[in-house]
Image (cartoon, rainbow, N blue to C red; front, side, top):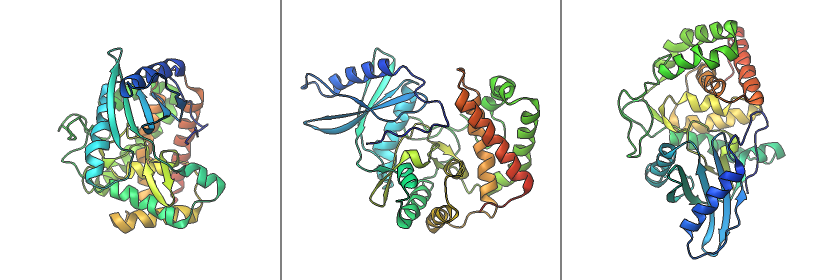
Length: 325
């Protein structure tokens, strides 16, 4: 059962007591024949909470989405339609309900496995499993869309909705002019803008077409069933640049050089050779995630500090001209 939380970020920004209450109400809807439900907290992120429940019908995960129905509907179309069609291994979507007219709650399959992050910490992750992690990501990126943007409940992307190929879409311009820009300071903000704009022509040139991007592909969201990866938590999925996921995956120095090379080999075996400077470009794209972290309305000391450290480390790496392939 997954219980890991990344201590570099603030987690459970939602009221867990309230989330469990909502989850219990949903369990009554999903399993009306049962009089009681024992919900156990699994890991959750900024805006959701996951609860494990086991009963005579089976083992399930109840996902409480506090950020609105659109995310729940996006996960529904991905887990029930898009991913199975392309034989990508992820939890099966089973049902969804709305509680109090506001909160969308999903019922999904509980998948047996060990979190990749735990296997890495214990030193037990095999070379074949790492190779498969890379191959799985390439398989995700084989799903193509006509344009970049957010995936709707029909499984399509509306043209012009949100162009991820612009260096500074409206959201990011607003963030840099507001909370995010203030938190990073004038000097860091200027360096960020210069860094992105300098690398942008190469980022656009590396894009072979808009693809399905998981948006949070990292060791805490990957289960290993033996050596087979199961990919969890699709709430940030969108149509965008494939290097975004690689930037997320290799964000922290938690990989040995040999481990990262094995993952890249698995990826390239399915996707094709990456650009020579893929690591630098993926780090630049990951700066957008840092902007989103820094734009949060709540004060999140650990998250903000981590985001600023990642930004500074990226600037340092790029200025040194290191090729981190």
